[in-house]
Length: 117
Image 1: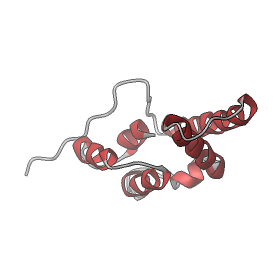
Image 2: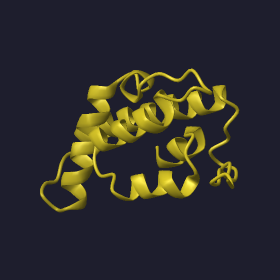
Image 3: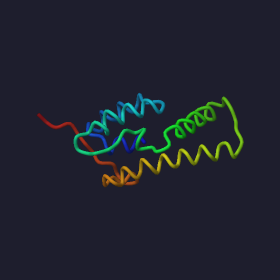
Image 4: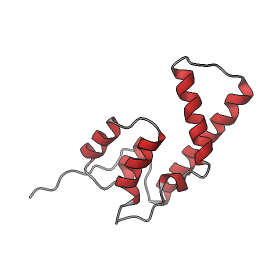
Protein backbone atom coordinates (compact mmCIF):
# COMPACT_ATOMS: atom_id res chain seq x y z
CA UNK A 1 0.00 0.00 0.00
CA UNK A 2 2.87 2.36 0.78
CA UNK A 3 4.41 1.91 -2.65
CA UNK A 4 1.03 2.46 -4.28
CA UNK A 5 0.50 5.71 -2.38
CA UNK A 6 3.96 6.95 -3.34
CA UNK A 7 3.46 5.98 -6.98
CA UNK A 8 -0.06 7.35 -7.37
CA UNK A 9 0.44 10.44 -5.22
CA UNK A 10 1.09 13.97 -6.43
CA UNK A 11 3.35 15.47 -3.76
CA UNK A 12 7.13 15.12 -3.95
CA UNK A 13 8.24 11.66 -2.82
CA UNK A 14 9.97 13.04 0.26
CA UNK A 15 6.67 14.59 1.44
CA UNK A 16 4.69 11.40 0.83
CA UNK A 17 7.33 9.32 2.62
CA UNK A 18 7.22 11.70 5.60
CA UNK A 19 3.43 11.26 5.80
CA UNK A 20 3.81 7.49 5.57
CA UNK A 21 6.45 7.46 8.32
CA UNK A 22 3.72 8.55 10.73
CA UNK A 23 1.19 6.15 9.23
CA UNK A 24 0.19 3.21 11.43
CA UNK A 25 -3.14 1.46 10.96
CA UNK A 26 -5.67 1.28 8.16
CA UNK A 27 -7.40 4.53 9.04
CA UNK A 28 -4.11 6.41 8.69
CA UNK A 29 -3.44 4.76 5.33
CA UNK A 30 -6.93 5.76 4.26
CA UNK A 31 -6.20 9.39 5.25
CA UNK A 32 -2.90 9.54 3.36
CA UNK A 33 -4.54 7.85 0.34
CA UNK A 34 -7.26 10.50 0.40
CA UNK A 35 -4.72 13.35 0.54
CA UNK A 36 -2.31 11.99 -2.05
CA UNK A 37 -4.33 9.79 -4.40
CA UNK A 38 -8.08 10.37 -4.15
CA UNK A 39 -7.95 14.16 -4.22
CA UNK A 40 -5.54 13.99 -7.15
CA UNK A 41 -6.54 16.11 -10.16
CA UNK A 42 -4.39 14.02 -12.50
CA UNK A 43 -6.09 10.64 -11.96
CA UNK A 44 -9.55 9.24 -11.39
CA UNK A 45 -8.97 6.91 -8.43
CA UNK A 46 -11.57 5.92 -5.85
CA UNK A 47 -11.21 6.15 -2.10
CA UNK A 48 -9.08 3.39 -0.59
CA UNK A 49 -12.10 1.84 1.12
CA UNK A 50 -13.74 1.60 -2.33
CA UNK A 51 -10.62 0.32 -4.10
CA UNK A 52 -10.32 -2.51 -1.58
CA UNK A 53 -13.53 -4.39 -2.25
CA UNK A 54 -13.58 -6.17 1.14
CA UNK A 55 -12.51 -3.30 3.38
CA UNK A 56 -14.01 -4.90 6.48
CA UNK A 57 -12.16 -8.16 5.78
CA UNK A 58 -8.88 -6.26 5.37
CA UNK A 59 -9.52 -4.59 8.71
CA UNK A 60 -10.05 -7.95 10.36
CA UNK A 61 -6.89 -9.34 8.71
CA UNK A 62 -4.92 -6.28 9.82
CA UNK A 63 -6.10 -6.66 13.43
CA UNK A 64 -5.10 -10.33 13.49
CA UNK A 65 -1.70 -9.48 12.04
CA UNK A 66 -1.18 -6.88 14.78
CA UNK A 67 -2.17 -9.33 17.51
CA UNK A 68 0.08 -12.07 16.12
CA UNK A 69 3.11 -9.82 15.61
CA UNK A 70 2.87 -8.48 19.14
CA UNK A 71 2.28 -11.90 20.69
CA UNK A 72 -1.16 -11.07 22.02
CA UNK A 73 -2.84 -14.16 20.61
CA UNK A 74 -2.50 -17.23 18.45
CA UNK A 75 -5.02 -18.82 16.11
CA UNK A 76 -5.80 -21.88 14.09
CA UNK A 77 -4.92 -22.44 10.46
CA UNK A 78 -8.46 -22.09 9.11
CA UNK A 79 -9.02 -18.82 10.99
CA UNK A 80 -5.73 -17.39 9.71
CA UNK A 81 -6.17 -18.69 6.14
CA UNK A 82 -9.37 -16.73 5.62
CA UNK A 83 -7.75 -13.50 6.83
CA UNK A 84 -4.65 -14.07 4.72
CA UNK A 85 -6.89 -14.39 1.66
CA UNK A 86 -8.65 -11.14 2.58
CA UNK A 87 -5.28 -9.38 2.81
CA UNK A 88 -4.11 -10.87 -0.50
CA UNK A 89 -7.38 -9.86 -2.18
CA UNK A 90 -6.86 -6.29 -0.94
CA UNK A 91 -3.33 -6.35 -2.35
CA UNK A 92 -4.73 -7.49 -5.69
CA UNK A 93 -7.28 -4.64 -5.63
CA UNK A 94 -4.58 -2.02 -4.99
CA UNK A 95 -2.23 -3.51 -7.60
CA UNK A 96 -5.09 -3.50 -10.14
CA UNK A 97 -5.65 0.23 -9.63
CA UNK A 98 -1.93 0.82 -10.06
CA UNK A 99 -1.84 -1.24 -13.27
CA UNK A 100 -4.83 0.71 -14.62
CA UNK A 101 -2.77 3.87 -14.07
CA UNK A 102 0.36 2.43 -15.75
CA UNK A 103 2.20 1.96 -12.45
CA UNK A 104 4.33 -1.14 -12.00
CA UNK A 105 4.81 -1.59 -8.25
CA UNK A 106 7.63 -4.07 -8.87
CA UNK A 107 9.69 -1.54 -10.81
CA UNK A 108 11.40 1.62 -9.63
CA UNK A 109 8.79 4.10 -8.44
CA UNK A 110 8.32 7.41 -10.25
CA UNK A 111 10.29 10.22 -8.64
CA UNK A 112 8.61 13.54 -7.99
CA UNK A 113 10.75 16.38 -6.69
CA UNK A 114 10.02 19.91 -5.61
CA UNK A 115 9.86 22.31 -8.56
CA UNK A 116 12.45 25.04 -8.53
CA UNK A 117 11.01 28.51 -8.19
